[in-house]
Amino acid sequence: MFGLGNPGPEYALTRHNVGFQVIDLYRKQYIPRRPGKITCSAVVYRHDDFLVVKPLTYMNDSGRAVRAVVDRFGLAPEDILIVYDDLDLPLGRMRILPQGGPGTHKGMRSVLAALGTETVPRLRIGIEVENRHVDAVEFVLARFPEHEWKALVPILNRAADAVEVFRTATLDTVMNRFNRRDPDVAPPSSKAIL
Image (tube, rainbow, N blue to C red):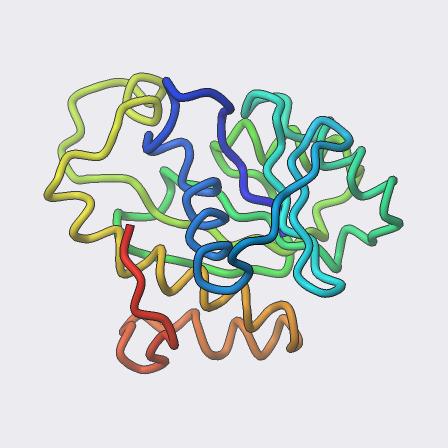
């Protein structure tokens, strides 16, 4: 599983770092006390035979780190999961798909170009808000205000649980369980908050 984001403290907790936030939450809930190792322009954490990866490249160059890890560990693009923020979904929504284009996301565009295929499973987390008054770049690089965190935290918990199900089940199982709009339909097993 790869969570997309920008490295560095100035980007921590920004909208564009939702992928990193899911990784941090997943690690806290499912693989505590396991340090990561820097390899292939990424920090790689292991959970049994499952890799949890934070690229250390900037978002628009995410594909370089993803490709390096995929090649280094002999992974198939259809067997990985990319987690990222998505302006094409409203805040508080989550969507898991087996393939498709990058939409407006430049990090995902980089990943698909580097892997040479659109058959890459992804978990998209909506960050768009109604009546946004700033351009996309300024918006995604800003931090979430408190009222947006209230909508986002349940989805981040749900995303971490979806990643754990992805680790042991088929993608169809993950999509059937977590693509439902009502989060109470498939309650997360975790209770963590950020």
